[in-house]
Amino acid sequence: MPPRIVYLATADARGHLMRAQLLTHALRAAGAQVQVLTTSDEGARFLAGFGIDAPVLSRHYAVQFDAQQNMLRRETDRNVAHYMFHPGRMLRDVWRLRAWFRHADLVVNDSFHPALLLMGWLPFWRRKVVHVYGASLRQALETNFKGRMPLAVAKVFGGIVAWQIDRSKARIAHDFAYGEPAHDGHGGHRLATPVAIVDAVDHGDAGRRVAAVYLNPHFKDAALADGLEQGLADAGLPAHLVGEGYAQRVHWHARDERWIEAAAHSAFIVSAPGMAALSIASVYRKPILLLLTDQPEQAMNAGRATQLGLAHRVVVWRGDAQKFARAVSVASGELLALPSSPSDASEGRQAAVERLRPWTALMLRLAASG
Image (cartoon, rainbow, N blue to C red; front, top):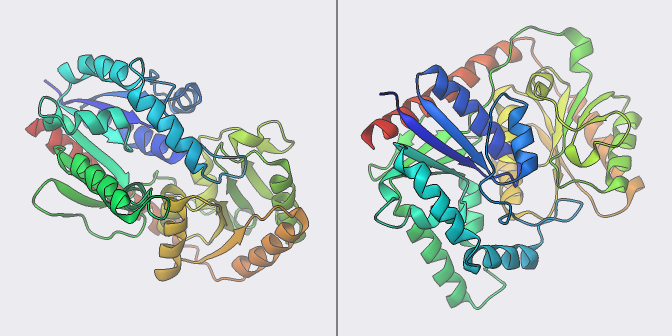
């Protein structure tokens, strides 16, 4: 019987969904049966664009953001608390997930859905749960209340979360800059963030003179988009603009299933510093303009990009469209001046293949041992 895998991908950010569709197609090609679940109707529509039917588990759980992708901590805490303690929410989802568990060899939690955190902690189900998460996301979760509650309380919270995570069958921490796969011998694994494999055709100078912009659905502020468009125009650079929050704007696309291919052959990438965007920049050796907001995980990622010497510039939205446009224009000029090589696309394609292979092998091995 082929391995049976259930993959729950939270829809808070599209990086989780991109990883889910990428791994699902790779695992199915290797002979596994994979059922994907997600947490919003928008997430289900996103996955449908990649040929994946994903039922929505629950519409009640979500991290909360404002229109500039700044994380709303109080609103998020309130939403998570309501989800966890309302009898018709998390317990209902646990009840629904029981049926999926019954027929699964492995259940993937990408990333930290509370129902699977609980089930990955309980002895009845934990032998099937693997948590998949960006290394910076786990740190952000465990330190969520640091500076907002008494230190002792914050430490207790972080300890409980860590205990829940570590009780599961396995954990896969990923990062855009990880090298060779590694494991600790106790169910903990480290892998480089997987990236879609694109063709290695060189599009010439015309292709490289386009900025590939992706802003996740939390970005909705019109003035921010005005400033970004103006800054890129002032730098003399056409842009391929993708963002669900700006779907009604002229020249913007809500979704583009081939955006990563555009990014791999662009002059540079423009995105918030999520793990997926940084991985694309790293693998395909593209400079990246990071739009930094108040989101702890992504702030850590931006810091790591600096430490590791990834070719990038950072711009911060502070509410002034003209100042933002000038900052974008200056940063764009600096990124355009960086040297590039015609071999970057082909070498990046091979690097993407090498990143994906250990993910598929590990998932199949974990499913077989279940």
